Image 1 (tube, rainbow, N blue to C red):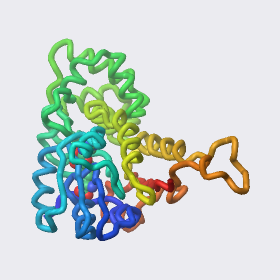
Image 2: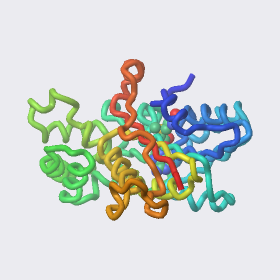
Image 3: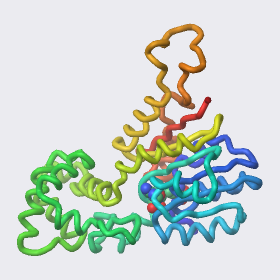
Image 4: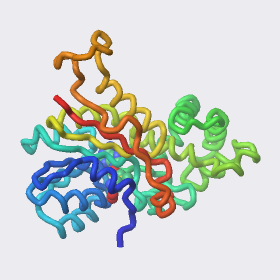
Length: 309
Ligand SMILES: C[S@@+](CC[C@H](N)C(=O)[O-])C[C@H]1O[C@@H](n2cnc3c(N)ncnc32)[C@H](O)[C@@H]1O
C-alpha cells in the first residue's frame, strides 16, 4: 500500500513531454509516486532522483527496482543537484521535476514531530542527520528571531506574542514536545481566532521551513535545474503554499522576460529573446475531483518552464 498520494500527477508528468529515451531528474523522490510513473515511460532513458530523507529513499528504492534498473537515487539536498550530477558525468538532462515540501508519511509519522496533532519530541528534520531541529529553533532562537520567522514563514499575526510566550515558558524548562508547544501557542492567541483554524498551523509551517531551510534552497536549485535542461527540456515545479509559489513565479518571470529595449518589436532578433518560455501563463491547479480525493492537493500549484535556446 502506498501511503502518499502524489499531487498533480498526470499534469506534471505530461508537462515533462517524456520520450522513451528521456533523461529526467526527480528532485524530490519522496515515496516514488512521480518517479515510478516517469520510470514506466522512459525504458531507454534514465532517471536521477534526489531526496534527503533516508526512509523515503529506502521505500522508493524497492518501488523503483520493480520497474527497471535505469535509475540512480542520490541522498542529498537538491540544492547540490548540479554538483552531484556532474560527479556522475551528467551535465544536461531533458527534464527536472520538483514536488516540494514534505510527504504524507513524513507528516503522519508521529516520531518525526511535524504534526501539531500528535505528541512527539520537537524535530521536523527531513534529513535526520542534520543538526538543526525544531527543538533548537524553539529553545535557542532569540525572541526577535522567533517572531521574525513566525511572521515571514508563517504570516501569523500573533507572531510577536507567540515568541514572547515561548521565551517566558522556556525560562523554567526547555520545550520538549509538539503538544507542549501547541499549548503555549494557544495561550498566545485570543479565543475567537483559535476557532477559525488551528492556531499552531502557521507556526509549525514556519518552524519546518526554518529547520529545513526550505525557501533558501529553492531559487538556487531552480537556477541549477534551468542550467541543466537542454533546448526543448522542461522544469516542472509543484508548490504547496504561497511563499513557495511566489519564488517560483517570480523566478520564472525573470527568466522569460523580453528585454525592454526590444519589447513590442514585430521581429525580435534572436539574441534578444529570452532563453526560456512559460509553458502556461497561469499556474496549473488540481481538479475538484483530485481535491475531493486528496485534500492535501488543495493549495498545490504547478508551474512549467521550457528552454527555447
Ligand atoms: C511532497 S514529497 C514528494 C512526493 C513524491 N513526488 C511522490 O509522488 O511520492 C517531497 C519529498 O522531497 C523531499 N525534499 C524536500 N525538500 C528537499 C530538498 N531540499 N532536498 C532533497 N529532498 C527534499 C522530502 O524529504 C520529501 O520526501
